[in-house]
Image (cartoon, rainbow, N blue to C red):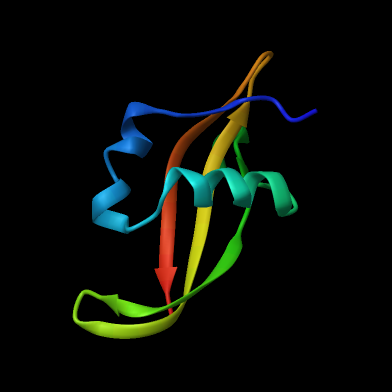
Length: 85
């Protein structure tokens, strides 16, 4: 069973600016392979079909890349990067 996922205040503060949802972050962590990231953290990457406008341009794909740490009882998301293409 997967541990609960909690977004830090820092990660939550970027939801509007970077255009991701909590559900997308959870799906990415649950369904994508985990890889090493900087400072002993982990990351996962998932592409989502988008086909919408972001910052004045239409993009077909949104990539969500949460950076997180696995703690004893939960997974804590430190920040989330999004890429549009």
